[in-house]
Image 1 (cartoon, rainbow, N blue to C red):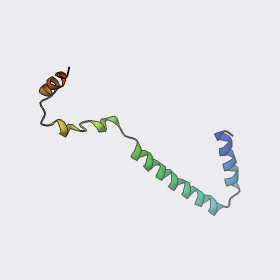
Image 2: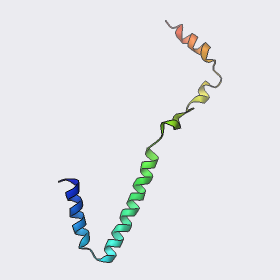
Image 3: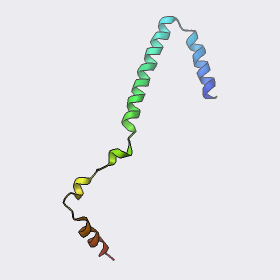
Length: 74
């Protein structure tokens, strides 16, 4: 069953509800959407957030000296 058919079925069921029940349903849907939005925000990140991540590890390291030592492995 396609999504549009499912939505139409749900809408036809909603039309059968009384006014108060439809308001309650709308409030519950809005509440659920807000929760979903918060979850989505907490999951998605921008790559720029990774900028300087771990920089404290390299703070006191002479990079040229480090690279030279690594090349001596050969």
